[in-house]
Length: 521
Ligand SMILES: Cc1cc2nc3c(=O)[nH]c(=O)nc-3n(C[C@H](O)[C@H](O)[C@H](O)COP(=O)(O)OP(=O)(O)OC[C@H]3O[C@@H](n4cnc5c(N)ncnc54)[C@H](O)[C@@H]3O)c2cc1C
Image (cartoon, rainbow, N blue to C red):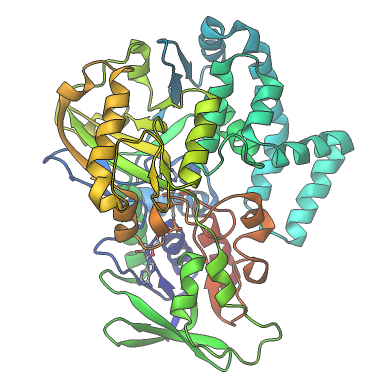
C-alpha cells in the first residue's frame, strides 16, 4: 500500500515526495502535464539551443531553504548545480539613470550615491535592520502558522528586540510599499527600486502588506545575491525526480486526477481521468485551493467535527495575471546605461505612481499602457543556456487583468488573451525600445506565453495568476488559504494540502512540501 499519493508535481509536491522517500515512505506523484515541475520548466521554445525557463528562474528560495538543507547531498549527486550571481538586479529609468544592487555593500552604496545620494544612509539603515530582523523573520517563514513553534519564535523575538521594535515590525507587515518607501527614501528612483519588488507579488504600491516584500527582496538581493539553475531551472526538477526514483518512489506524467476518494470522512485514494482507482494511506494535493472543490465535488464528508466548507475554497482569490515573453537574441539589449547588461534582472516600473496606475488598471480589467517589466538576462551568469555568443531574455509583465474589459491606451480591441497576446507583446517590446534602443533588431525569435497559456500549462495558475492565489493579507500568513484549511491539514482526515496556495505561499522554496512531509513522516 502506498503511503501517499501526491496530486501534482510542483516544487512542493516533489519536495514532499523526496522528503518522505528519505524516511522510507512510499509515494506516487501524479502529474496532469507532459512534464514534471509545474511552474518550473525549461524548454527550447524559440530556437534549437536556446533553453528558456518558461516560468520561474530565480531558485534562491530553494537554495536557502529547508528542503535543500535536508537533501543537499542527494540532490547534488543527482545533478543539481546552481549558478550564483552577485549582481542580482537593477532598476533603469526613462532618463537613462540606473541603480544596480550588487552583493558588495560598498559598491551598492556607490551605485545609489550616483543617482540618489540623499538615500544612501537610509539604505544602510535598512541593511542593518534586515540583519537584526532576519534571525526572527526567516524561522517564522519556516514554521507552521499558527503553531506553538511560531508563538515561541515571536516570544524569542520580543525578548531580543523589545516591545517597540517588535511593534515596528508588525507596523511594517501592515504597511504598503508606498508608505514604506516614502518613509525611508526621498528619491523617486529609490522608492521605485524597492516598491517594484512588491509588484513581483500582487502588491501594487498602495496595497497593505507590500512593505515586507519591498524590504526583504530589495535588501535581500544585496545580502544573498541570486541563484539560478545551471542550464535552466529544470535541473532542480530533474534532480528531485531522480532522488524520488532512487528511493523507490514513482512519478507519472500525463495523469490527471479527477477525484479524491473519500470513505468515512477519510481520503483513501484518487480516481484518474482514465478511471483508474489508486489507493493510498494519505493524499497530498499540490493543487490550487480554489480547484479543490472540483476534486471533492459532491463529497459528503461525515465524521468530522467541523463542516468542511469545501465550496468556500472557491472564494480563494487569484492574484492579478502575468505574461511571459521569451526571446532568443543575437546579443544582450543595448541598455541606455550599459551597466544594466551585467545584471540578472532589470526592472522597469518606472516610478511608484506608474506602478499604482498599472495595478489599478489591471484590477479594473484594463490592459496597462506601461506595465511594470521584469527582464531576466539569465545568460549573463549562465551562458550555457544559449549557443555561443547568443542570449536568451525573458520579460515578465506585471500586472495584467484576470478578465480583459478594455485597453487603458485605447488601441487594442479584443477581450481574450488568445486574440490579443501577440499585439500586446508588441506594445511591451515597443516600450522597451526607449530603454534599450534597437532591441527589436536583435530578436531572433520570440514565444509569448499569455496568462491563458500559463493556465493551460498548469491549471494552478488560475487565469494567469503566477502566485497560485493572491498574497494579500486576508489570504496570507495564518489565513492561507482559508481559516478552515490552515496548517496544510484539511477538514478531511488523511487529506493534506501543499503548494503556493498554502503557507508560506508562492515561490520555489518547497516550504509547504517540507511541512507536509513532516506531518506524514
Ligand atoms: C511566470 C512565473 C515566474 C515565476 N518566477 C519565479 C521565480 O523566479 N522564483 C520563484 O521563487 N518563484 C517564481 N514563480 C513562482 C513559483 O514558480 C511558484 O510559486 C511555484 O513553482 C509553485 O509551486 P507549487 O508547489 O505550488 O506547484 P505548481 O508549480 O503549481 O505545480 C503543481 C502541479 O500540479 C499539477 N496539477 C494540478 N492539478 C492536478 C490534477 N488534478 N491532477 C494532476 N496534476 C495536477 C499541475 O499541472 C502542476 O504541474 C514564478 C511563477 C510563474 C508562473
